[in-house]
Amino acid sequence: ANPRKEILTAIKQNQFYVVYQPVVDAHDLQMRGVEVLMRWHHPGAGEIPPDAFINFAEAQKLIVPLTLHLFDLIRRDAPMLQKRLPPGAKLGINIAPGHLHADSFKDDMRQFAASLPPDHFQLVLEITERDMLNQREATKLFEWLHLEGFEVAVDDFGTGHSALIYLERFTMDYLKIDRGFVSTIGMETVTSPVLDAVLTLARRLNMVTVAEGVETPEQAKWLREHGVNLLQGFWISRPMRLEQLMVWEPDVQ
Ligand code: G
Ligand code: G
Ligand code: G
Ligand code: MN
Ligand code: NA
Image (cartoon, rainbow, N blue to C red; front, side):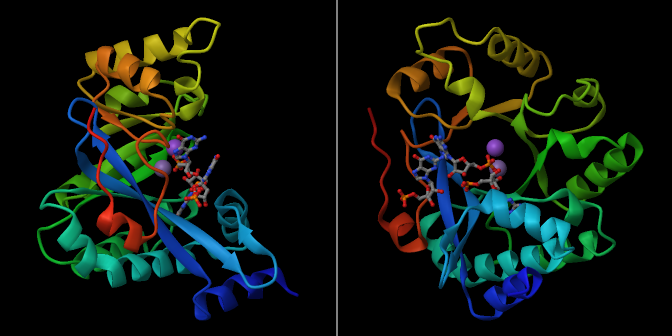
């Protein structure tokens, strides 16, 4: 079949769904928000990994319709999410570069925000550092996003090979430390010196840090002791369907 058509059909036939992964405070492990992750259950091929279909949608110039569909799925869940999450809870949404740079981006974001219950969720746009290359454009865009009430997170931080100067120039609210660094905590070799450097840098720049891929209590403890503010990963919870999220309780320990 024509793969481009497959995505459009999948949208129509509701083959995409979303899962939510809690992001908790490093100290009390209370949920401060969730990251929304998209999934594709293909009737023939089964679960298709998001890395594959996101890149594919980008290449096929379908990332905008796909993200608008994601917004639609979130909007449908919003009344339940509003019951589950307190006012001000963060809703982290991954924004692909092809959408960030699209002409419709600002209108799309405004409409999405307006489609949610008013003044409940704090939307956080997760953007990878690879996508922040054009400084002039990014500075103006981030200013606009903040004026409109969005927050911005640098996703997969440390993997982008970009000049760190952008951290001083752009206003970003969160640094999400890539799980590749987190996984070095507790291994027999020493913890990544890059992780130490990243945390020092984040502190000096007064940025709030989120550690991704936290899989063990030792990692959580190390991160908390090194000043990381928020934790996300399998140790806290896997990404869950809405029904599971509604009954999920953090394991306080
Ligand atoms: O959810 P996880 O399984 O396996 O996601 C793999 C990758 O796909 C991650 O880098 C994640 O950021 C990305 N991803 C997941 N959901 C979305 C989405 O809705 N939009 C975009 N742009 N990326 C997503
Ligand atoms: O947007 P981003 O690339 O950060 O997407 C988060 C990805 O990481 C998702 O694919 C999610 O399923 C995955 N993930 C979340 N928690 C963990 C974890 O603790 N360990 C590992 N290996 N992957 C995780
Ligand atoms: O196990 P469960 O079906 O609840 O996992 C939900 C999602 O979390 C899966 O779709 C998958 O993307 C992600 N996930 C689950 N287990 C793993 C794992 O061991 N490694 C990674 N990278 N992702 C996982
Ligand atoms: Mn992300
Ligand atoms: Na990430």
